[in-house]
Amino acid sequence: MEFGVVLQNDPPARDVVDRMRLAEGNGFSYGWTFDSHVLWQEPFVIYSQILAATSRMTVGPMVTNPGTRDWSVTASMFATLNEMHGNRTICGMGRGDSAHRVIGRRPATLATVRESMHVIKELAEGREVVHHGVLLRIPWVREGRLPMWLAGYGPKALRLVGEVADGFILQTADLDIARWTIGSVRQAALDGGRDPGAITMCVAAPAYVGADLPHQRDQLRWFGGMVGNHVADLVARYGTDGPIPRALTDYIAGREGYDYSHHGKAGHPSTDFVPDAIVDRFCLVGPESAHVDRLRELAEIGVDHFALYLMHDEPERTLEAYGRDIIPKLRR
Image (cartoon, rainbow, N blue to C red; front, side, top):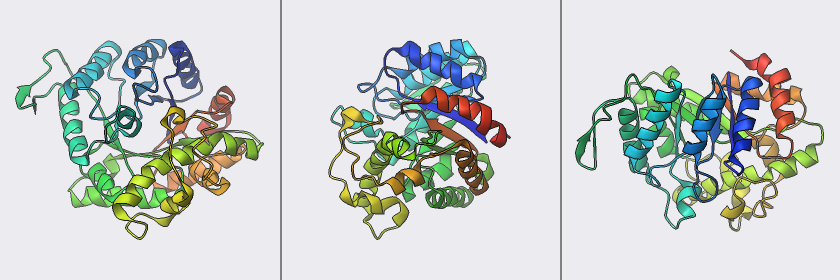
């Protein structure tokens, strides 16, 4: 299993860079950030600094979207960073939940996501592609490489992952949901004539190492709210008796709204509906041994990559515990 850390681009940006450097020193090989340009600072500017401050870390958004930048701009930014730092970028893609809704737009359709992933990857890797009806190629790209991962929960998104993506991002560490989603992605890959083993399976979830479980749960309750925001869209589309597992949908019955001004932050006021049991299922809490046990269970399901959301009040302690006691036991 490989390990990544996920941060928000809160000012000062130098703190984000310093924390990524600390993460690399503790064995994390991927550095991810949110990409919601109004809520946080511009990630691609910060990626340049992270890459300069680290030597091996691969960096990218978890996740970007098709709607807030022209796809040729996104491709050029990735290609520029790769030319400067040696193909050390990765693109996590989504429909644009917070990035779109904060500026009054709906998330992109999956058809748009599919097309954007193709255009961005082709351009960033130096190949010709039709964009806006024009045949384009970035002429200065030489031996570029950009893995494209896709985040999602619903059946159509999971099918799209299996058909076109290099990796799958599941934003919850729940074992039952991981089994269902990973199984769906693998089946879609087989149906499309692809090798399921070529798709990296990534679980992204908060992790907090410590002994005070009530405090950890309060610090991480925001994640159930963030996931619930996506699940609410699925319930609206498929209903509660549709193909979405009850393990994913039941807990949002008490959800009344969502405040994006606190998106992804401890103490989020829109997450009172999230019970302790959901925090325990969706996140990794408790002492080091509990984290090792859950990660081993995820590895048995087929998870190749764990991306650790670090939005709580003990980020350095958790990074150091992972580097000292957890990553060495799980590293391939």
